[in-house]
Structure formats: structure tokens, C-alpha cells
Length: 281
Ligand code: SF4
Ligand code: SF4
Image (cartoon, rainbow, N blue to C red):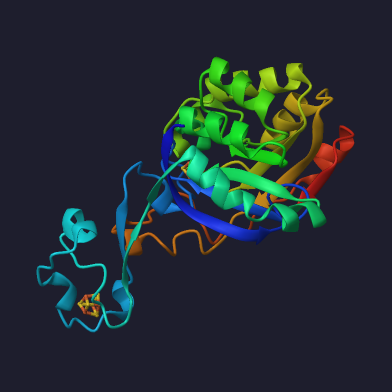
């Protein structure tokens, strides 16, 4: 019964695997993708979220309070008349979270859905993830991952989950490092492992203008995937112009070095040429 931290649970999601699902967002990620739209999912610690743009500067949240849960934030989480101050990141033990998620099981079964564990990066909380996957059985489980982990851990997770949603950000190691902060070598090794295991997976490619949306990178991605018996399809996810919307709320700055207003190129046909099913989300 491992402990972990999550930052959100979304009910009734339809793009994170088959059927209608519940998606759980693990808090914390080792990557720093310049286009990440979940800045509250990056740190492994609970964080303060303040919607400063609506603040009327009454100062009430800054007056000291005695609430134990507010202590580490130096702001009161309860007094704001507009409800602008909250903490993000809740600790759970795996059994407690599994019980909470299993409350949806009838609904999930009727809708041929399941539970998707996303993030942040679920594999960055290994014991919590593995215990949770075991405890959620027999519900259908999917894990969305950057693939950035040891091979031993990746294999264990791939064996336990029913479906892997595997993000592929760039095939070139230098460009991958430049835009995500990490090498793609362990990621590509885990992709290779997933393919050799014959595990069911969906490859997800975020399309970032001028970064990875070239025909050459799509061709290299298709070559990696073309003989994968477990591959259900490739999902291309064009850049979302709202990616930076939540950064100021968690006291961070959104400063991508690519031109986010440039048009995204969508080379769906590159995958189809290799007989790989491809959809655009
Ligand atoms: S209590 Fe709310 S409105 Fe007042 S200063 Fe704090 S965030 Fe702003
Ligand atoms: S891997 Fe996902 S959660 Fe982590 S920084 Fe990249 S986009 Fe954000």
C-alpha cells in the first residue's frame, strides 16, 4: 500500500483510451517539455494555485490563520471571498484511491471504459503506480507515459496495465533534449521493449510547430512503429494555443522558444503510407 500524490481526477474522459474513462493525474514529472499544458503536474510537491487575474487585493488571505493545511503555503486557503486560492496536490495511499475509483465501476463497465493513469508522469511514482494497477483489477487500465524510466520498471508496468499510451516527442536526441530537458535514449529503448513485448499500445505524438512537425521526423517516427504488432494507432495531437494558460496561476512563466502561433503541419499520410492507422485529436 504505497503512498503517492495526484493533482486531479477527471471523470468521463473520452480521449484517454477506449470507452468512457476516469483519468487520474499523477503529480510530478522529470521532463520539462516546453509545451507542457499542465504546469501544476510538474513538481512532486503540493503547490499553491492563485488566480491573481481576478484578485481584488483585499489582503485577507495574507493575514495569518491557524489552519494546519494552510501552514506550508503562508496563505490562507479558506478565506478568499472569491475562492481564488487553493492547494493542488493531494496525497493518497493506493488502496484508498482504488476504493474511490472503483465507485465508478458500474458506469465504466456499461460504457466499456476504464481508468487511465496519466500525469505528470505516473512512472515517476513507481511503487504507488504498481500497487494501484494491481488494486484496480479487474477494471481496464491504461497508463499514459513519456516512456522515461528504467526498462525494468517499464516492463513491470506494461505487464500490469491493459493498454499503454506512449508519447513520442522527437526522434532526434539533440532536439529532444533541447525541448524536453532529457535524452530520448531511455524512451526509445522502452518503446522498443513495448514493441517486442507485443503489448497493446497507442502512440501519441504532440505536434509542436517548427519543433517536431516535419515530414522527416514523422517518417522517422513511422519507421520506429511500422512493425509493431501491438500498435492500435498513432494519435497526432496538434499544439494547443491554451498550453500556457495555467502557468501564472502556479507562479510560473510560460516561455516557449518556438513560435506557438505558427501553423502546425500534419503529416497523417506519412503513417498511412506505412500501413499505420493514424488519427488527429
Ligand atoms: S483573499 Fe482572494 S481577493 Fe483577497 S487578496 Fe487573497 S486572493 Fe485576492
Ligand atoms: S512529459 Fe508530459 S507532463 Fe511531463 S513535462 Fe512533458 S508534457 Fe508535461
